[in-house]
Each structure stands twice: as C-alpha cells, then as structure tokens.
Image (cartoon, rainbow, N blue to C red; front, side):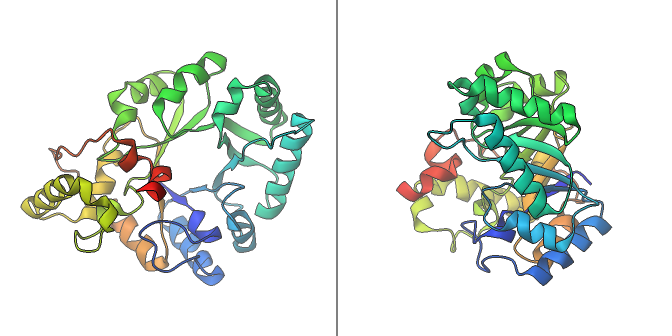
Length: 288
C-alpha cells in the first residue's frame, strides 16, 4: 500500500474540512491498527504538529516507518548542532523510538542561510550515527529544489501534489528526483479537503474558482466516480511517487480512504491545474 498516514490531526485541530477536531487517543490506536492491517507502513508527523508525536508514542509506533520534521531554527540560536540534537532527542522520547525512517526540514530555506552548512552537517551526522535512515526536506514549491539540490541530494522529499497543484510534475522535478534516486512523498491529495467537498459546503472564499469546482463536479458525475476515489487515484497513478500522505479525522474516514485507494485509475483527467498561489498554497487562505 503506497499510502502514508499523516498525523497532524492527532496533535491539533487541523484542516479546513475537519469537523471533528483533534483525534482522541482511543481512535488513534484504532486507526493505527487499521493502517497496519492494510499495509500502510509509514506515518508522517512533525515536531510542530502539536501533540502528534506524544500521541503516537502513547499508541505505540515501533512497527511503523516514522517520518518527522524539524522546525525552523529559532532566532539567536548560538549552537545549531546542539539544538538539532536536542530537538531530535526530545522527538524520539515523545515517539518512544530510538530511530526514525526519515527526518525532514520543515524550513529547508534555512539551508541557504548563515547556519545552513552546520544544519546540513547535523543532519548528515544523525544519518551516519544510524539514528536516521533518510534525511531530506519538506517543500511547498518545487522551485525550492533548485538551490537545495546544489547543496546536497536529499534522500527523501515531500511536496504537495494533486489535481489542482501539479507543479511537481509540470516543472519536471518529479522525474528529476526519481532519476536521482530520491524517495518522493506527496501530500495534499485532497487539497486539505477542498476536492472532496460538495459545492454547497465549500467555504465562500473559494468562490473565485467556481469554474474549476464546476468542471470537477461535472467530470465526477460523467464518470460516476467519487471525489475521494479520483483525488487519490491521481497521485497514486504516478509510479515516481513512493508514498501519498493522507490525513484522516476518524477510523471510519481512514477506512474509506484505504478502500478508495484500491479503486481503478481513470484514463483521462479533467483540466483542473491552477498556478494561483492563493488557491494551491493553504498558508494564503487566511488572507482570502
């Protein structure tokens, strides 16, 4: 199963389509059991995801591949190496593990700053010690990779990719990463839920893109396929993508996602591609 379970909802109330809030502990345990039983072997988390790491540690995640992320180096940090080690040590303590599959930078642009060389060496040292199998970056725009890959070739890259935001493919970076032996994880398959909402329930601030939503709904109706199935089938249809990270608010929702991931991939996709940052970058949504 090429899905990875995103766990930000385990640590905080997250997502524009989230109506249930933070996932309770018992539900987390049930979701992890379902994931393991269906071959979902990878969990995606981050130090900045509220209580996510702590909740995962309480549930027990020793049998999963864990990918976590370092937050930004704080201003005025005098010893970057010690800070990184401290962050990772605390992360492992919360998770209840002694090593992780992947450690990514949440702010990879800091590699280009004054602390960049030290930060990169700290990651490499963690990998050499065996405490981290793969080091890499979590990006928002594939354009970030041009400068980053001049410094080092990441083992793992996570990036947004969906029917609306296709930049990873259209810029050629998806193919370039795979040709370089980089493991690729994509997120935001549902564009934080916008692609699986009904037109009547989608927030009014997304009305400027109504023509896009109308094309999407018409295409779904014509093929008689669910939005969930199609939104998942799109990234899963690319062999270059190793894992598609999906979040779920409940066991029921996770079961629906896993079932949908086994559906047949449509042959032709609707033209929903959009390069408008106000739509494809969720950090802009608060300004709409």
